[in-house]
Length: 133
Image (cartoon, rainbow, N blue to C red; front, side):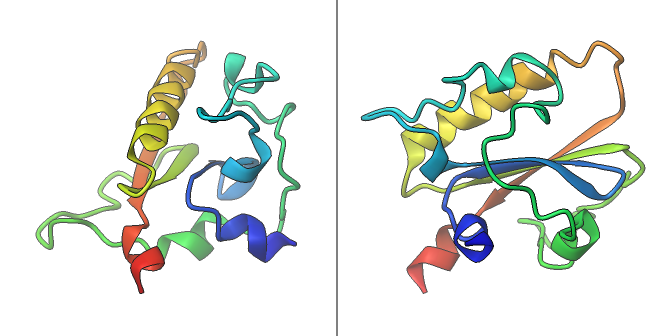
């Protein structure tokens, strides 16, 4: 079941100190024709960990994921800062372009709820190649 979660085309993961704290995937959102990411007001708090609607794999760490992330520009250092306590990874694609845009807009809005102004890094991961091959 967890593998199915990690293979969803649209998802967002919140990591705190390398540990997965919140995980939201498209197949658990409901809604047609628009995915309802915030249907239970999951994203009305930063970090939406208490309302996560996907079972957490607590053994899955950001350090496990980051070895597979590649910058779009070879001269770019993807992990330039890498000091943030909170890391957010958003998986998006052109295949579901409209839904991807809506998810990204929601995540940016959620980050603005960061009242403690904790240092946050956000990674936008395009996964089109995964579904093409």
